[in-house]
Image (cartoon, rainbow, N blue to C red; front, side):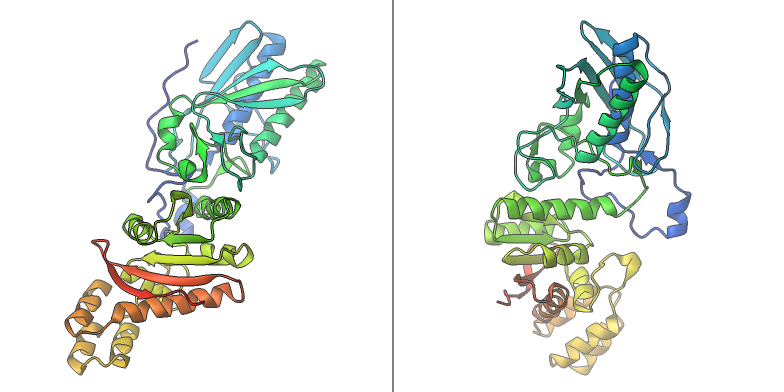
Length: 388
């Protein structure tokens, strides 16, 4: 049977590309969405089916696996293959209703008998990356097959071996045809995972529009920067602000943290895993919310307070007309424009307030913070320098 081409990926995610999550969805709406399966669960199902076929000559279809939480889902096979000394099976990744970059991809596991006493070994096939930087859950040189998927596959091999009277020594090569192209839409290159995707998953289940994958990627980005000995990282809310802060400081790609709306996720992790200097860069509206004390900057969980902004302007010496217009403004950008026309450095004031909020979350952590307000054209519209 010939392996089918991977299906077209939907919007975005794990390793974690930009703009994937509709984080403003209400919990009740998310509860109605269909869950899916991680690449780790798919690889486990494929490995179990392939090992069964290696021992018996028959592929179980569907094939049932056990997830870390005890659930036992069944997977249909999309590919079966056998040759001299090996068997291979493939499962189409179904991410449910999550906008996952790997949705529709074919995950293949080829299994060969291992040397007696060797246990289960893992290799990266086509489209699966290799770790090249320290700071990730796997050492450099290892295939990017994360620890939980490895345990799941090891358990599946052990269960089949026990049922068939085999030793359970196996070599598993995991492949994702087209995975190297898909990985270009993830953080893998920045994290030092080269050549393809990561095989991920801690529960085996994809929860639609979960924030957890984004936070996980933030944490891994900080881990990689620390392991590389970097003393300065930059967390940005989007591509424009990221490009601006990188150009300003000449930072390498692996010093850049795609913060998105999750300022709290960055700051709380740095509180426990400090880096000497942190630059926070973002647009005026999002950093206004940070200055107001919000650490989740998404529009669905907090809005710019125009009365607060107007009060800030008034405190900086703006006239009554400017303050009134600011209070009645439609957008934060409109307020910034009013301030510029009046010659008031509102951007600097917002940057200082955002830095105060960040400092409050970091507490006594030895992290010096600066905040950069970046306009839509990528220009510096406000700055609060490093606080130590």
